[in-house]
Image (cartoon, rainbow, N blue to C red):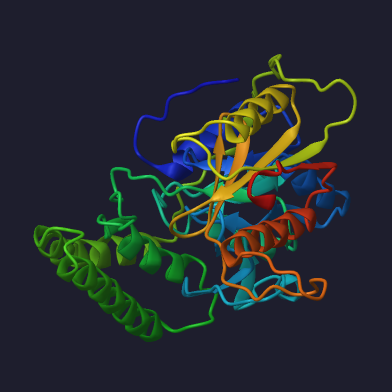
Length: 384
């Protein structure tokens, strides 16, 4: 592992430092509050056999590990995104298209030489629209961005200097400023300045309503609203000035000219092929465990320590969640009420057992869509 220090809170600057250190042909990015699934890198690099592809990213789950945060999205030259696409938007990969595909920064990869060719990340973007800007510039160079249906990353969305534990972004200044800056430097004649300003006014009003909503719900203090009012004037002034100047804060190729060599990294090697195990258990830590649940916990962790993929399916009293805990993917599932079916005449199954078992079966089928399952283990307790 190579470690470097970024002198300021600027995600684009930190990514440029990473690019400069990287020795490989492909540079992948993930956030410090995200977890990649085992096939992540293999699936990302698979598309680079196409010489036109210079960037690729996969699917992002939100903090639950179960719902999607991002699958397929496009952005326009004003920095407005659409998240409701059902399939990849590869048809927009042509230079200076008003609509273009992009990938999420927490699940993205790029060919290193292409990044160096455009000067890396524009360090004007300390946060927000940073990876979108990179994708836009690569598309304008005639390259393609690939949006994958797999290469999964779980984004846990932890609190930070700009975001609360309720996942509310409180520092809106970078978002406001970068929206205006992006709309100008990537415009290329698509929209006159009065449209850029009108769209900025609409966007700023939307951000204000978002803060009002969270303040009324008690998630942020009223002072945040006062700070926002000050940030608006500052964002307009800096965003317009720097955007209209036409000067980007990118890096000269020489900055990236001395990558540090690969370092040896110990890793767990399985004895034979890596397999996927699924265990069913009525309970799992931090809930109290005993009997067959204790057995399931111990053996699941032991097999994970051998380097295999291990999933444990257990009960949830709330929403469905998926978390990686001590090397084990723990799926906490709320049993869905379902009607027993295909039972022999005269036979019945208690509803709570049927609901739990059927819910586990559906989750097993969901896992198998993306990963071959080799072994499923279920104790006889409560008829799993």
